[in-house]
Image (cartoon, rainbow, N blue to C red; front, side, top):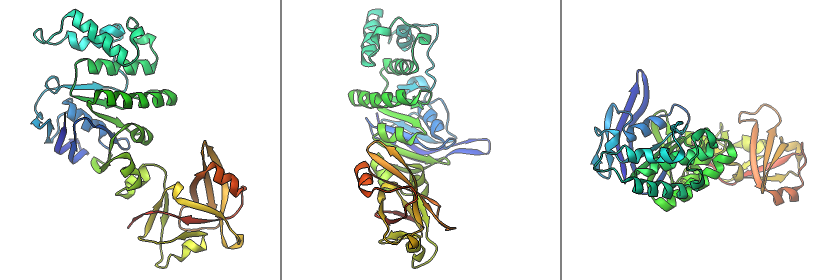
Amino acid sequence: MSITLHKISKQFGTFKALDNINLEIPEGELVALLGPSGCGKTTLLRIIAGLEQADQGDVFLKGDNVTDQPVKNRQIGFVFQHYALFRHMTVFDNIAFGLRVKPRKQRPSEAQIRDKVHSLLQLVQLDWLHDRFPDQLSGGQRQRIALARALAVEPSVLLLDEPFGALDASVRKDLRLWLRHLHHELNVTSIFVTHDQEEAMEVSSQIVVLNHGKIEQKGTPSEIYDQPKSDFVSRFIGQTNVFHIEDDDHGWLKSTGIIVDDPKGIVAHVRPHNISVEKTADPANSPVYLKDWQHLGGTIRLELQRNGNHSPATTIYAEMPNEQFKELALQKGEHVTLRIKHAHWFN
């Protein structure tokens, strides 16, 4: 089911949570709403679900205006961060709940409910836990049961509010991959809220970056990372070095051991992998030196420092393959020359 949001605004007292949001989500997409705390992500999700009413604007599902429709009429499944499972019910009964409370004419038989629940449990790979209670499950297992419960009523849209936020890092990583594969199998239009950029990049087919109640940018993970349209997006998505250029001839760059082949603005945002590092033949004319480095598996992250009091940030991060770092044989304190291979320029 496609989703269209038209001029959605929402205010809480003097705080403007959403400011004239226009957004189209095609059917079958897995979309991440990404942004810092307080940017309006969860409010927007709740308005789509019908759990919150917008001050102005309209919500369309598959072309139908559902702005004034109650939650129960929107065919939406909702998964909360803290599971919201019924503690007094077994796993089986939790998943069956939505089917059993349907109006009598729409309610499946108990035999149909049993088949449906076991089918969903097999889908989330937890059928062996059907008679357990939520308190007997791990966090990751509870979240998968919460997702199965949301899918039981066959929603046209699945909304997830920071679904993995309460889990530890290793479980989150496993569930991200699992959710992506599950989405490919089911092809249900899905939106999930996250403030974790890595999670958004890894799971979603589209990312919507929000800031102060407005959409900064929408695009694929690669578009958001490789072609940021604003200073905020560039800083928020991935790590970036920011160089403020203050004079017309960019002479300070060369004087600090940094070379830019083609300057195009006054502020350069440079990803760590877009900085090449070379040993300098003249250490006296290059105040940049290797302060430290971190081993990130196949990649080495270099922490570079500048001597003296320069206007750009004093720490620069660069990345290179492990093998290249070994070939350079750089030592801590050794001076280097940096070349910026690619930058995003903002005025």
